[in-house]
Image (cartoon, rainbow, N blue to C red; front, top):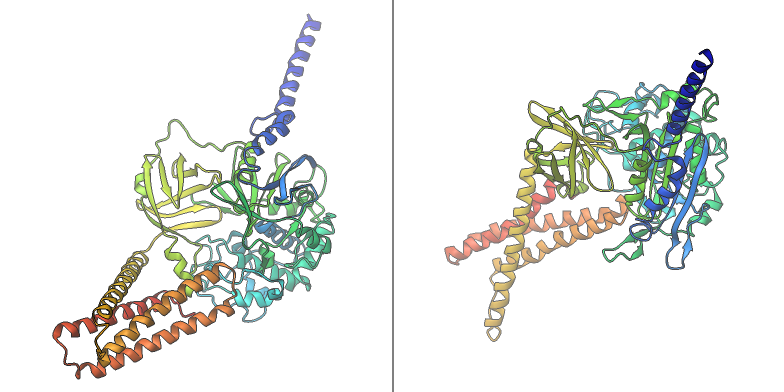
Length: 615
């Protein structure tokens, strides 16, 4: 009998071991690791050559490279394939190097995360703070220091335009428009400022610090971070062998117009390297059990860095010392990156010792970058059959991204970013050209490849904000909506008036082509106003085009002087009209017409001041 009991017990233990082994041999999504490579290949085939020119995909498991596969072309025209040695631009994944550097200094006792950052900066370094509350390193990590967005001097088309980091920070310093800690608004400036603080405390340029304390330590010989790659000549040469692409509506790939750009605030996104080097960095963030990370003196610092420090208002984790928290079936930290023509995504689960890196030479690529992590970690689901999901209709309204310019001429772009949220069904809405479906009370997920999560914060029955990892989305103010409507009406009226004026002038010219007609003095000013009004229209169009093509702020100042000149012309015309008004012997109708002719100019001047198109 005893023998039978022992046999049964052994069988039970054996069965449990086999079940446990099977469980361990499957990814969190449930895909067996024995099938994972084939499943990744199958998944990638849906995108390579269709929506992505080329890519490298690497999976790390238990401190080793599980798979490293190359797809597509680095040079489509010459059919040069992507290989494991191909270098890709990291984009904003570079920011993880900043936060790792910061935590190294924290470990050394040189930096406190809750200290006012002015303690680490030269006196008077920040000149546009509007709130008394201090900005801390944690605010920089969480992107909630309160700064507006800046659209100039992030990218340059020539390496010669790059300046030292300290000078770049002075050039690009944004206004603080929110109290620290109140609104999340992704900030390249804030990350670059953290890199500069590393420079100050380490007494060496940031790129030298990273090369010495991260790249050299991890033997990352094929990665550069200097904005012009002067810290690694091999990477610089290899970067010339790969092109960034966009895909047209016809499915054809074309080299991105600004395929080669240089990042002024380089700690925010200038790393370039091979995917195997990136894997070395990832594996150092989740060392094998019993091993220490080579990045830190003690694994306690690593554990601290990967601990959640910021939460959404619904209680879900949002940020861990600059590492964004992802929503999957297991805890995942991640950071995506985009440059003018490259996309990347870097995700890992420390508890699973599992990570995936996707690097593509495709602008705004989403299918591979955001789909593969879900394939590994599984689809997050918080729905409960007993829960009553709120009606999406109560969210309807106009919204703007918190990440917008608030000062200067680029705030005009904010007018173009207002999105109208419209409920499509009880648990579904559309905004910004995307569709979101409710997966839990006030938690929505986009139905496209980006798989963006929206967390809705209600206050008194109204939407206070909608939050996604990198930015809050705020209800548009009544003042903003009013001025936008006023701007549209003003532009439409001015354009219509100028068109009618032109048609009338053309008809009169044809009718009186054989007559010697004398144009009254006041009529000459009317004609001058007409042609003067064309100036700001053309000027703003050229200004917008040059800004979108990475012209420096300094080079754009000529456009502000043109607007000043236009305002001066309008003032002179107005004075002349008033002086000659009494001398005018025309009918009452003509007088009204002459007065009316000044209205488009007045409206355009109001728009120049309202949209700050003068600085």
